[in-house]
Image (cartoon, rainbow, N blue to C red; front, side, top):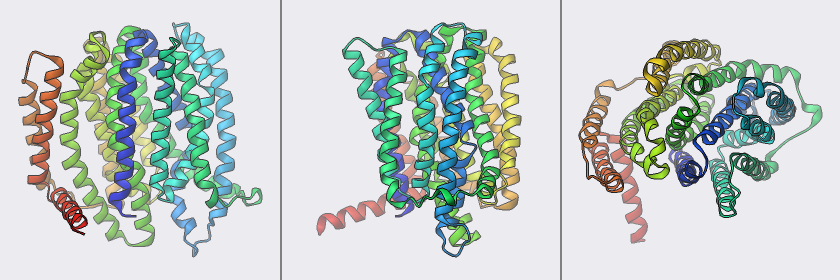
Length: 490
């Protein structure tokens, strides 16, 4: 399957999942109190951090080591890899779930002012177990480049969760606790679906569990786990600081804008990570250094010329969309949307600029710079949140990611660099910024008509920019048109 088809599958899943999120967004924001919505976001974000810690980076090791195991010339066998990882993940899921439950009962009441927080954390225990174990199954499918199955599982998860929320709303039983319970049901169904798809390929034997292989996998994945966790801390610590310094109401407003922006990450960044990393790892193992560098150079070019207009377009439209969906009570938080969107974009750039570290297994660099960035972020938040409020928190996330990206890129390019066509790249971001500024002043005196008019204009302008100035995009579009015409003629 071509790289385009993998990207198409993951991007389509991201788009459909984001649509489910947008549909659930007004249901939750309009029917839960600002306080409950903020706590719900805090709990789900905390689950994400806990699971990232609990996996010990084994999900990253699957992607890196599976091509070697699938290569019959290598000493590492698929049976060893499956047996070792699946056993380890099941044990880790059980241990983390127990720790999460104890934390919800013993620790949360001591650190959170809201009495609802404890119940929400306890209800999240099952979500923690199935999300952690399910990540092993999903990443084996990713490593096998079964992008269709993985994409369907993500869409299934999102829409089942949405349907259950709508049923609860119709019955008058919607609450933050119910949303967590429905999330557990969606996790279980998704894990059953992907497990059924992977099962025919699984080579498992308890006797093939290898402690030495597990040690090797953890040695590779642990720094990436710490990096992922610290990266999540960059996005979670400001919420705790906002709750402590500004209040629960401001936390809810911030969470709403952050959550809406996260759908952008779901469409662009998550899909690319799922598709691109297995591809460049396989190219490295089976082809050459030059082929890998060429793949990364082309991928980064497309990331800039396609991604930057999307970021500007989203930043222009999302504030009106959030108010339209959720109401004026969340409007004060929309000021952070451009900053949050850009920080997600910077995070995605690491996929290309840090590829050399992943390929050469020098993952401790991610850990070192993530730790520096996380500490910097927390310190800056304590200084700037009291001074600039929500904008201070969002802008400090950008500063922290720039520090992280600069440090990682510098070291990664020592082991695997690739040409970056800076002279060809600057024009589209500049023109996108000009269009953003001009369209930002466009006003029809109506929220819906504003959103509709800006949406049409920004789509036309940015599409024209890409077709006129981005040769790979133009070639791909013309190739697809030619293919469509030839198919229609046949």
